[in-house]
Image 1: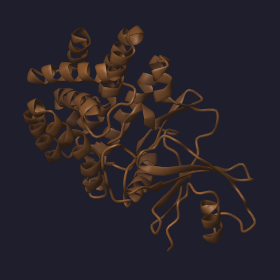
Image 2 (image 1 turned 90 degrees about the vertical axis):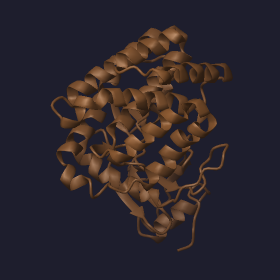
Image 3 (image 1 turned 45 degrees about the horizontal axis):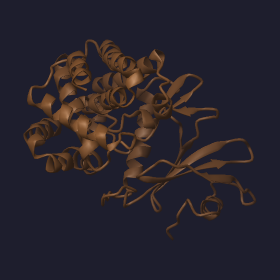
Length: 338
């Protein structure tokens, strides 16, 4: 199979016709979507009104430092879509359309217009508590239901290869190498994370991977999904709320309260699950690890300016020396230290 670049004009349409995905005389409108660092992503709009998002995994990611990952990960995302449709609340996962293993391509139903990216809304200060609750409940239900079906799901999602190359190495290990004083903290957390197998872990649970359509949150980008430590998802998600509390001082109190509320809603959602009883201190440690990794790892938060990155680094390292044990305490101490 000849490799194609789906962002090149006409390339994807020709491939879709040749492979029977669209009619022989059909010429869909293809629009390149911006923003992704690990995939080529385009919108395909057919004459019938049907619309797909088509993704093709890149071997070299679009970041400033060298970062490579096998394009086979697109098929892990396809697997994730098929299973998350069963685990997550109805309407929160885009339906699977098809995949191709030769050119590492995945198609899913497009979220209808008009929709907004949740990260963009948050950066404008558009923070709504119902969205925060949805964000927490969605994650909580994925964790709760996958824990309940552990015997079935752990063998399916046991491979953590892409989580290692796309998360633990570029975030935790790289940050550890750049910030020697944080290395013992990361070493201990890495060992703990690799030893835990409790739930499905999305691995990229971030507002940038959430679209808001008709006031409902829809989750995207599942290429590092695996069975492992739910604390990572919590830390990854809380980092974005707390970092925006840092970045947007006029909305600082609102984002701080949103992080506290998200934990309460999540905790209610997973109430009664065995993994939940000792999870909060580990969620705090993952949040600290991610807060530092997003200013010192391979993928820093682009909206933080140099002064903000330096401040977040200093505050987080100080908290690592004596970590809080609750999300509430973490948020309070972080915001106070700013």
